[in-house]
Length: 413
Image (cartoon, rainbow, N blue to C red; front, side, top):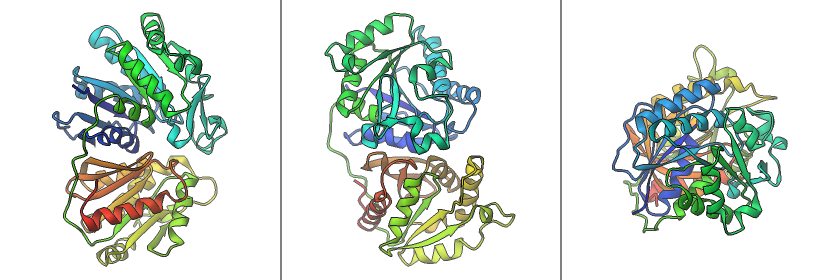
């Protein structure tokens, strides 16, 4: 029988892009957050801990509390971390290991954050993006927690002892033995190199074989490898009544690739562009002018792109306030949206929570890191979520096209 899983992520897009790996192989999977009570009958539960922006101690406490509430010993545990090490992956991993140790007296982690489908790899225990050190990437310059992208050093910052397993070990045919040896020793985590999906397949299979109590720590690349280790069934279609209302696409991420995607989307003239400046969002009366034109365009079947404009070097501290202000501005027209797309986990979480949505029934993956599902709660509409730095300049166009097909044809699968 295929294993049941609990995925604990630090943001919403990560929760979705890991769980969709299992859905693509025919298993029912759902994402939830907040005070929602997950359906225990669903084989793959993915929960957004909303801890990306928290300090290390607060993130660890959040994970400890959620694990006490959500973790069923009959479920294998996947701790999702960001493939560019944003947030507090070390503190959260330490809390996860402590939870397992307190529950069963033992804990061992298999760490493999690589996501080759999005250009993130691990070589000699260090994260790389596009073949170059992570420290040279835009995402690291804009937002990082640790002094370097060396995974062993990251874990050590939270008091976790680890051993690095390099590519020759990963590919050498005795990886399960190597993992079992680490699990039997003083190290709590095996740090695994991976450059390809095949490397991640080896890690997943060896990790499952080496120790039945291992917690897997990684990004969606490892989740896909773990999902592939089980059986594959035909996807049960996710269908809805066709809807002629337009799609709302919201770009709140600071990543340049999302901004490039917005510019590319505008070139075909098929969306209405409504940019909004941060100072407008944060003004006392907010962007009250937005709701009426958006509602009219959506009712006419037009797709609308709402973009938070940026100028110069963005102030990262404003991110949560901007996302919440935009969500408040759009809440009055939530019931008039035919489909929704959001780039950036913070933006997606703020919108969905404000719209009284408490979960997502996952349906399919549009491209690596971009999931498609059906919202659960006050609204039941197609939704696509994308981490801001994932994809390329055409990703937002592909998302728009897929949402248009989903809402007009009534088929999300």
